[in-house]
Length: 228
Image (cartoon, rainbow, N blue to C red; front, side, top):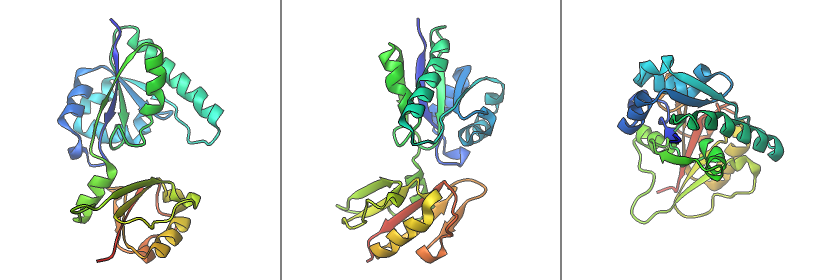
């Protein structure tokens, strides 16, 4: 029998936020895939190993997932990563792919998932706590109330978005272009809060646009709510 490939969310940063299901799957399986060239340098690995120390002694597969815009290069790396995982699945071993936050939200495993499935392998997604729900809880604010809409927007620095819809906005993956993002936030006239590295030792909180540094880290999540 072939093994199953699991995309497992480990939460946003605090190891105590890992779900029991995620911990259980990591403990019960010997083959763990981790995005990056060096598995033990991966943020997802560093989170998970704190809750599952035996992870350090398991078979770790480095799956290189470069952040590039060249679609051909991306596809080639995705196929290579899928083939790495398939070698173990063919041996009847399950593979647990660790991913930050929730496995259904901008997760690198979902690039591999259609390739694995097209090759005849079974995949399963195991959700974790999302970065934006963790950040809202850390800030002690609701993301949305009553009948408000929630807009989750990636990479708003592209300049194609205006925050002009009713409800609350979550801006993800904009840390590397925070200067442009800040201008967009100023134009929106919303109440803005940011959590950088939520749940990690390096966590920082900014409670206005002016507080946010232009060089805020990649894991900076913005919550922009309508003024009351």
